Length: 80
Image 1 (cartoon, rainbow, N blue to C red):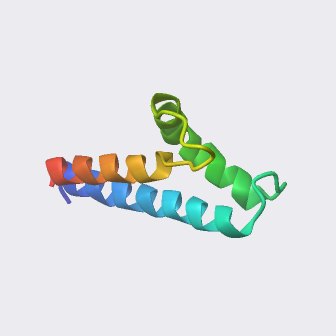
Image 2 (cartoon, rainbow, N blue to C red):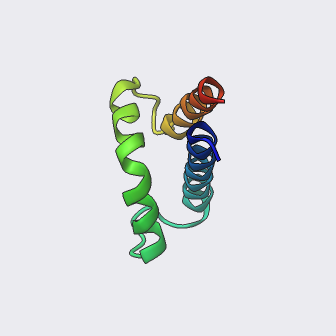
């Protein structure tokens, strides 16, 4: 497996983790003290936090996962 293919696979996996966090946020309170939620936050916050800071206030709607997913998809296309 080439390095580019490995990176594309890892990025795809990370995109899935971001999507899982988004889906769980619709059903589980953001303040829930659950190990899975904490684990997802620790994995995704390093990417999502800088995106959140760069985006203007959208009135409580968090668009950072969408922007991150688009950016990761562009990165995959560049690598592939």
